[in-house]
Image (cartoon, rainbow, N blue to C red):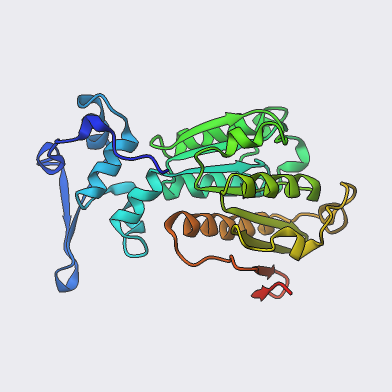
Length: 294
């Protein structure tokens, strides 16, 4: 279940507490609203001995938009934005796809992210992995992810799991999650994550890429999933699409954005690429097409 507003804020008149710090935005047709800067939210969090995320949720429940999230208004309601802040997502893999996904979900305001990866950055990651810097070569990818999120959005809490996902640790990692994102690079690991997500009844968002192409698919409990896309048995890791086709810079950024968007839609209960459908992206054309399995 998604996290709710901190009990310490129960009974607090949010608008009164922020009086003098609210900014009114007038819109044609009377669609006006209030927003508030993060400095005021941080002050209220300190005064109520709670955290920034809980204060943001309380503001949204009162119809007040944190200024950093104000541009989401229109595409998302205040209630939906509060739901994102109260939600948890598991990201398995913090490389090209995972780095893009982590950054986007943090900026979107998904409140708790668990990032699992046992790898470190190497020089060949610099062309496409958003979390990789020259000064981070040899460092843990998940620790870089936690640092990046802290610099982007301090309201988002990151649990950095500096180990590989296994059949043994996935049940605990999936507990309490609203969605799991597959940012892995080989089919055996993907099938393992899908199986664990099904067992935990957690929706699973798959993405894969090679060269200038990629796939995104959401797997809901009754969906055929990876078996419908790749066949019933995972192929042992060897030289996959990345080794044969390369991995140019735009592909993980585009596919990661599409995958993160799917995760947000799953959390909010909006229509997604579930039901045995998947999106195929070809950036050489460019094109995006949605197909049905079978």
